[in-house]
Image (cartoon, rainbow, N blue to C red; front, side):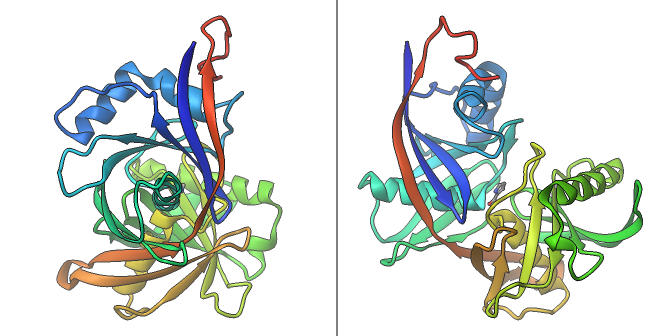
Length: 307
Ligand code: PYC
């Protein structure tokens, strides 16, 4: 029987399952080589943690590995039901809440290594967390996508640790449609987008906010075909990069991003290179730890390593 200790949390409704003990020892000189080792030789570990019957398609896994750089607390490998993520904003906030729950970190700023690059996270005394994401930018503006059954829609493409296709919702009440319809709409947009931009694996549809402090509400389709319950940390970062490029939000100003279920992240940015449109986005949110469990992998169980 193999055992792993995992701590579950959610950030604005989006779950993170952090493996704090018992995972595979990964080979590699860098975090990029280590994730390649995990993909090639330990993908069953990913499936056992996030896929059914133990997990679910919305679960994001965070595997903590020793830091390569002595300034970092640890490395984090993020993954989901279908593969691996370069960075995950809600997941980083979940990892910080998990490490605080374990008594491994206290309030203050902590650095983490991710596949997309180093990120920092500040745990505040009220338990909220501000992450400073990797350098982010918009790569394409107002491209035209021919979306099956819909026609031509305009979209921006931006990088923020993951690649996003950002679309303004065609009509005011679009985001009030049933989730199944939003999934269908976003999936069609993703198919259209990937014909020309195969690197894109997330779609964000933006509409007007529901609340008074809100600036915008979004529906985010994730790579595994599920939608983000949180406003999506890397997705909000991508939005900030677009707002900065359009001069619609000034450096340091706060942007309130609502998720489809009504949870919020506060975002702001600072310029890293204005001439190239590269920003450093900051995202503030809060995670709650909701389980501390031992995962059992019984080799006699045909589904022990996930479906
Ligand atoms: O918060 O960055 C994020 C994220 C990516 C996928 C799910 N959540």
